[in-house]
Image (cartoon, rainbow, N blue to C red; front, side, top):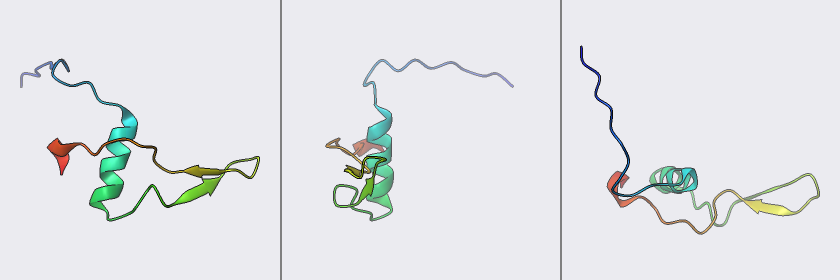
Length: 56
């Protein structure tokens, strides 16, 4: 079995784009849900990243 190597050259992605897409596909609005950090400040589970249209 041959393994092929692929390089990301078309569009580099950020891991936060992946999570934004996963939450969208699971119908979770990550921009409204927040968790508290150790100082008690709300931290939203996703930032203002776009969903990956390739995975929708």
